[in-house]
Image 1 (cartoon, rainbow over the protein chains, first blue to last red):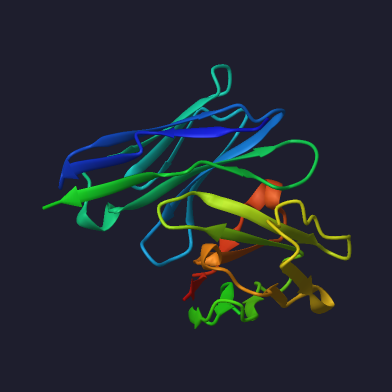
Image 2 (cartoon, rainbow over the protein chains, first blue to last red):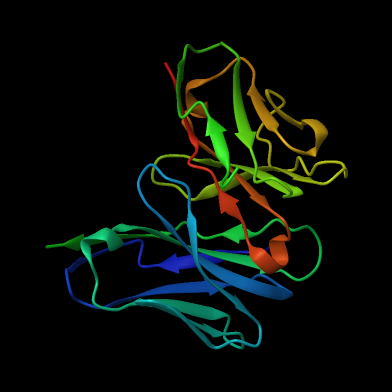
Length: 113
Length: 114
């Protein structure tokens, strides 16, 4: 069964600090992995997309890594800002079959001033 | 339009009533998904439309839920005889090529059944 597990479930950090969110998956055969940011009351917005051959991808202060061998991904946020407070969702798609991705439950990040 | 539009943004209904939720995908996007997000929970897949193919309804929780997509564009999610456990945010997403480009989500419809 395809599964995506995220940790931690929630995280509180001070403004300006860095943090790393984790995503472990069992989706097979792997196609791609995306990280989404979901602000309260809004739909998820894509941050990065990573395919099998990519190890690292950055988008501003967000850097995602992917280890396809261990089936793990991380999202590193540098110099956090108050606006980073949101839920971060890991989404993994399979290479064959239906294009229905598997969503993680998300990590709720709160950045305090 | 520039993004995925959902309406209404909020809906309060009485238990037992029927509701219709609407999704306007990005023009040209052939793939359309409906998801449900309960408070503090992850996204739960409901139904997937791809072009003119038969929809994948494997996520619909009961026969009270149905969805249609007219002309390959606008989609309507209908919930009949609503129950309190149907209260959630219903999100719609569309894509031109899910594997390559991912999905664009709407802001959702917050449904409250009282």
